[in-house]
Image (cartoon, rainbow, N blue to C red; front, side, top):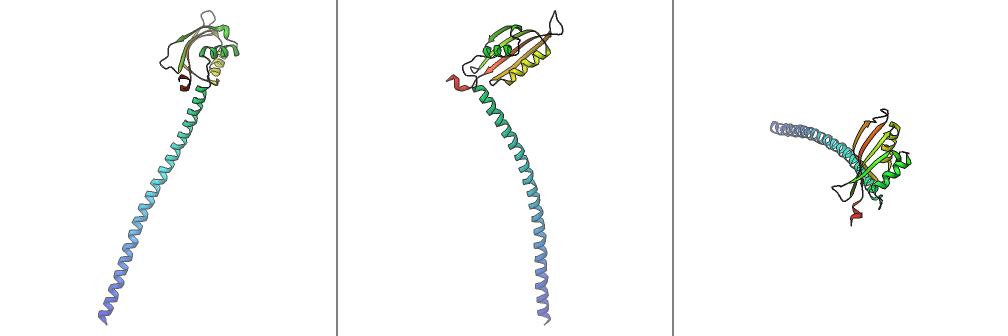
Length: 168
């Protein structure tokens, strides 16, 4: 009988050892799985953030493409004159000169204004930005007027960007 007892005890001890080993293995595996889950959650948060940025950029690109397509066959100087007239500074626009551009989709001009007030300058820049077409200001030089230092002389380079569909 002692041999049977020893055999039963041995089997119980073996089952206990196997159970402990399985328990320890499951702890290690669950720790590994939870750290992996944590890594996956961090990656998901980062991908969601990047996806949001991408959607924002896509919206901005769509808006710029619509603006570029809205110019039609009008030229840059037409838009500049409309803006200057709408804010009452057409007589202060003393020079407007087309300049060559590196892209066939872009029309550039140098503009010179004399004796602008700060309010008129702000309105001019705002109207350029708020146009339904894509107007870009690439250079601005301001200086006080010689005879009236509280007024501003403004030289700027403005570009009208048109969509690529018009070149075809």
